Length: 236
Image (tube, rainbow, N blue to C red; front, side):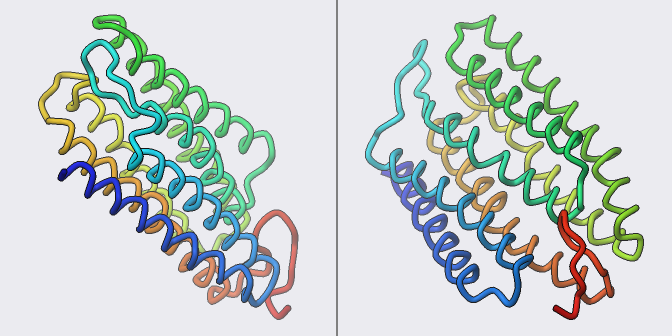
């Protein structure tokens, strides 16, 4: 029962976030704000669908005696690349780096899924591979993404440092939950696992969405003359 409550909480939180960002996109004051709202809308909408499915016990199987919501990995494959696109839109990331980050992200999720459906100890091998792709993604964010963002917006270094810190802290906690849950050392039960994933998902999607809006506002206040991939005067 407690696990079901957490799943419904996730569903309602994501739906509320999607509604908020959807209305925001409709009322956005210009194109660049609309793009940020739209990206956040789809990130939350995808997550809302995930949680709705889990409340109906869909996308769930017992795999090697481990209760597994494998549908999480399906939705993460769609939602997390959009988060990277959102970051890149704010930071004016070059296409090659954007593509590399999305590639590392998708491989991280794909190999994490394989780890989840593999028997032990094979699961540990795939977990390590997945963490390796995450480290690669972290390197791209901390080095290339940050450098390009600061080059594009030299007066807004603190904005991108905050975005990266929040993003990496939240995303780093996912593999920690994975290894503590039944997929790993089985130190926490399935209800606690669901609660932790729900909290992380809401923070990574709804919470990070609000942070992205705040960051865009700070970029404008700093007098930045270009936001996103295109040069657009702030006065427009």
